[in-house]
Length: 246
Ligand code: NAP
Image (cartoon, rainbow, N blue to C red):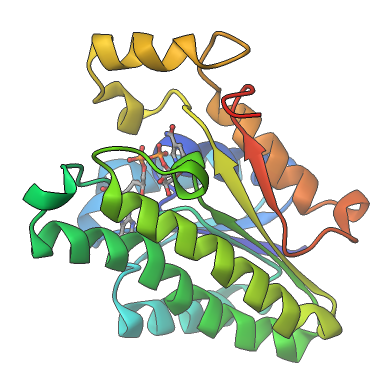
């Protein structure tokens, strides 16, 4: 049975992806930010995934930390023998207008959203190169494609992921490894619940389908990118936004 690592998998889009991959028959290494987060949601999710007939275990690591990612990847490899799929999903926002944005808010978002993708792809990429197989999906955002006032740091991190995806796809392709990015629009999660009613309504105006996306729809796209049918897709950024920008 194959194995996936999903970062930031304890809630929101990450948890939906973990559920979907488990239902697809893939063992799941659930990354949680800390041991405390394993107690606070991770362990329960792992139990649920095991009820779908796969193996599932939580691994604590702050993905913005290089050494913690290295140790986690080693631990997952030891536990499951292979690492066949990686989903770089963990992400944060620290919104604010550019001229008021603190250096701390900038660095925090870059480290959590962008450096984390380097940390994970470097270590998992080495395992996949040795295996001569693997699939990677990086969760970017429409904000990385089009920008957004008040999200300078977030846009920087999510745009970087698109370039990182293309570069890694070029480097790893000759060993049969695919690397793609997904750019979700506005998906109903704890992250979007933080938006004010006014902002939420303004966003809906611009969405062709006049609704927010579901976490299960993003998970379904990851499942497709990990399927045999998607074997010839690499280096791409696939937008899933209900027709937000066309
Ligand atoms: P969410 O509900 O806030 O979940 C994000 C998860 O990432 C949380 O479990 C969080 O852990 C974890 N995480 C954050 N920083 C971490 C770190 N340094 N180490 C380990 N785990 C960390 O957000 P979401 O809406 O599901 O978003 C998931 C991904 O989709 C993010 O990359 C986000 O940028 C992207 N995205 C979301 C939307 C949307 O509309 N929701 C749109 C476009 C892109 P804690 O809970 O412990 O903090």
